[in-house]
Amino acid sequence: MCNATAGGSPCRPRSRRQPKEIDGQRLDPRLTGATFTELPERYRQQGLRGVIVAKVAPGSRASRNELDGGDLVLAINVARWRT
Image 1 (cartoon, rainbow, N blue to C red):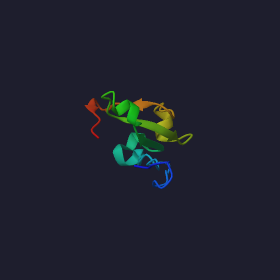
Image 2: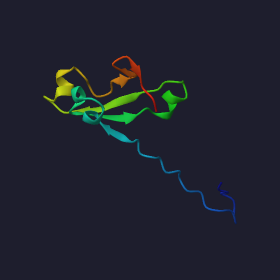
Image 3: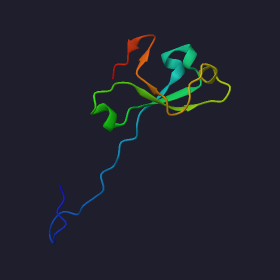
């Protein structure tokens, strides 16, 4: 905790943790070319579990399977995402 008054400890901005990136190929060969990131805290607080498509390489298998950046993935092959 910081105290901005005289003699208190200086306030420092909280460092935000960078979301972990996941290579789609590690999850399933059909996701090759896609990179996923963890859900933002605001979604997890609502009880959602899954990942967000961060980027998709043009012409990749993930692109041919119609994944787009910003897509929210809640399940793969009807298996719920576990975080």
